[in-house]
Image (tube, rainbow, N blue to C red; front, side, top):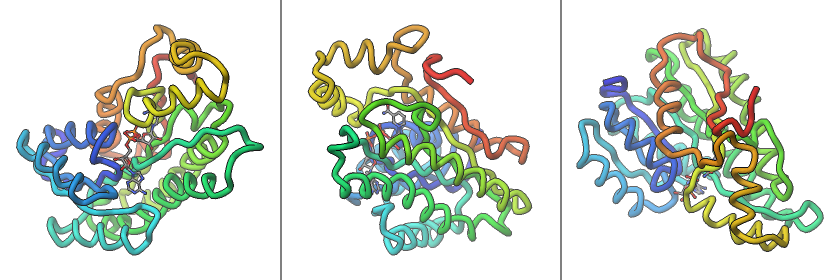
Length: 260
Ligand code: NAD
């Protein structure tokens, strides 16, 4: 088992990709905190994963945009298990509008979840990693960390920003064995993406079929969605990689949509 007894916090893990990564980590023997907005939902996901084992999971209430909520959530995990080895800052939302129509409040809301959330959770976890065998910080980027699409000004800006944050943490954390990397998936069929299909069809004046075939999968090598399992495999690599050789990096998993 690659993560036996490792203490992991995954934000936005009550469902979607975060849940899938949590499931994989529990299968590798980890202790995983499912940190999400609603405690009851987080606890339900945690109970489901714990029943699968061999690792275990707990639910933790956490709005990643609130410094108090983040600090309390991380403190709860440290009290329960004694430290933090892995942080996967995954919580995220999508809001699409043309720039000229983009409500400033939506811009700020999206940036707060992706950027403030990644900063605040890193800030809260890093002191528990320094002086304690180091740790792995993983940010949930996207192909949109490298590429742009119409209607996604806030999302593309936020996902590009995470590359910079990971690089700084890599430089500051190296002497303490703390590594930071970014996963950049293509489209994965989760509630976040299901929601975008009719929204984009409306904004762009095309059919939902065209949104999937042209906008989402048009540039892939095989017209296939990336899967939650694909993302979990990369998360496991970043979480378990043993040295500073792999830090400050970003890995695109997108069926060739973006190649570098
Ligand atoms: P999802 O909507 O299925 O799940 C997101 C989770 O984040 C939910 O459980 C939600 O409650 C939680 N969340 C939202 N706001 C929060 C907050 N303020 N504090 C704590 N939790 C919060 O989405 P998903 O598709 O699983 O996306 C997860 C991450 O992956 C996001 O960062 C997203 O940008 C990124 N991503 C998704 C895709 C995709 O195609 N689905 C592709 C690339 C990157």
